[in-house]
Length: 125
Image (cartoon, rainbow, N blue to C red; front, side, top):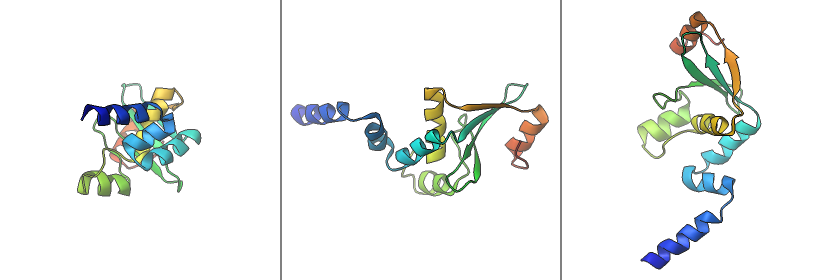
């Protein structure tokens, strides 16, 4: 009924930003915030205008994320999003969105040749 909906909405509006992110995105939200705090997201851009985002995960592994097709090569994305359809994104993609929203994304210019290597998965810049 409308009183239940009103009570839920009042509770949601009292949440902190971190609580709200966790409410919407689950446990990966806190992990994504850690990646944001660590400045783990870098936007690679090339002269041709192509962009890719690289996120250094908690283990130190580098993941190249693509927002244009909403994809991350990490195991969590493959398992949770693609196989089980239990989420919309992983902590790496959420960290990219958060860094962009907060204007704290690291920026790096690469050549078109380097970008091609990154996009094909054959090389990091």
